[in-house]
Length: 485
Image (cartoon, rainbow, N blue to C red; front, side):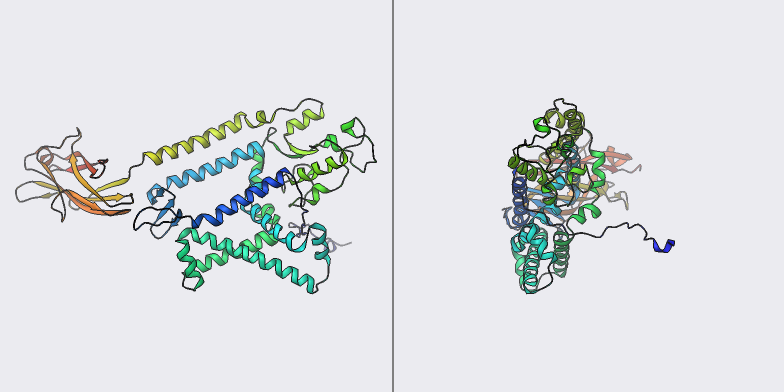
């Protein structure tokens, strides 16, 4: 046989369709609840209203790219406050580390969007085509009117779900009722149609056809999780010491749980048939396993039928497996979860969360920024006084218009002698700033001839801005350039 007759090894295995069987149990019910809650949050949130006052958006959660704002109920994030978003992203990453260290790929199995939408698409598929055996027969059957009808029905429902998914996403970026009306009459911005089309297509393909392929080939988390897990991590595992040797049992035949020689596993393949990833958990830990725990429900159901103890497949740690094999008592669940590694992750996660909350409640309702105009550094007036010019930016982050008073003080907090402050185009040092807006104002500070500021080089000054409504103050330090500069 020549070398040309030998097929080279394949780096990518062709996908074999997986038809998971429906299962009932505690973990399956938990997945239903999480799926319902997460989908409800995603689809309903853009339609929740929140009164912020006149001329302000009333959508509870809104990413307003045009005005560079992020609204979350009573919280408003401005562009310069992006550290709040960065902090939330860091918390999300630490949260993944925490949950993976404690419970393995629990995020992947229960709350990952790919898992949630795949579950929804599988629910539709099962409703249209039937359970596992019926879907297998339909897959292997030749194309006829019945198969075409079932396929078109399923794909139509999938497409509607995908369309609703793409549509819900763009509703987060503008007023949802207004955008929906514009979409229906064809007057929405092209970006809205393009974004919705892309998300509809990806949801349709990822949830309906790619499914487990996304988790295996596209998602990096299965490769990263190994660094997050250790011997104390609780994950879905098969009690090999109890289940092997597997095989069919005769009625009344003792197994290892009864002191016999045969294992409790009857090789019914129930754990494989319900797995959405199409793997056999009895082969040990695998990259594809998302720890959805449906195999636990399936195995427990079989154990109940044959009169054997539950837990042949269960959440357990590698340390527990070794201890149980030696006849020892496994560690309590809390001792696996509350260990130095997870406590460190939790401390970091909670610390960032507390810092963000404190920063949120301590932030000023208005922001102040002052930039000296350096061309020229100063101007000598007709009477010999020295004047400096500053560009003042005052940001009113409140939902109502406000009046502010601007004043100047020295390093000791008192007004320097012989120093005056005026605002360009205004008779007094008072500013009126509209709600939720930024006002730019030219400010002049003048030092009388012969004063310390006028004759010196650089002198420290502080500008104070006071909210005339509630008396809140904000300060910013700057410098005054005198004649000796």
